[in-house]
Image: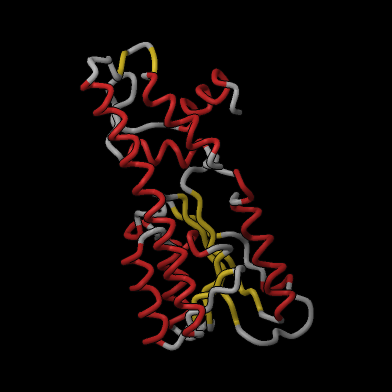
Length: 230
């Protein structure tokens, strides 16, 4: 996945830099993603305001367009960390922790690396790898998110198995099965975006109506519109 870098923000910082020297990192799963304030521009602006409020120097922002579970493809994150560990900055800042990772093991590795090499991982919701109490909060956030994702995936698979046991056809080339539609509507009412639902169905191994493996948010949005939950 191609990694791009946003323009250098050093010249935009008013006056001398105070406090931490920070490199920001923003991530979205797809180039079109912009929901819930998670677009690349929105993340950058939130980090800029956070740094201004706390007296940090925001040196630059790198970003990736990749799934949060694909840490090995987060080249923008790797570039930012390499710059920090070379002494150019003191901390890596993200808008929210799930922008840096959505995997518990990867999160633990990031915190360990930060502590070992003397830099800090921060987010705009006050997670700070340099504060042990905040590390616990970060662990809880990631664990809860992972568990919720697992429960939704398992619930969808159970619905598919139940439908099959009752002799229902769970997928047709022309439409999404009623079982999957019910789960999509349920997830939407729980506040999940079309992109998040598509990722969950893909991760759960639920086949698309055409028999494919990957779901797209456009198909989920059509369900929203048809079911009146958009």
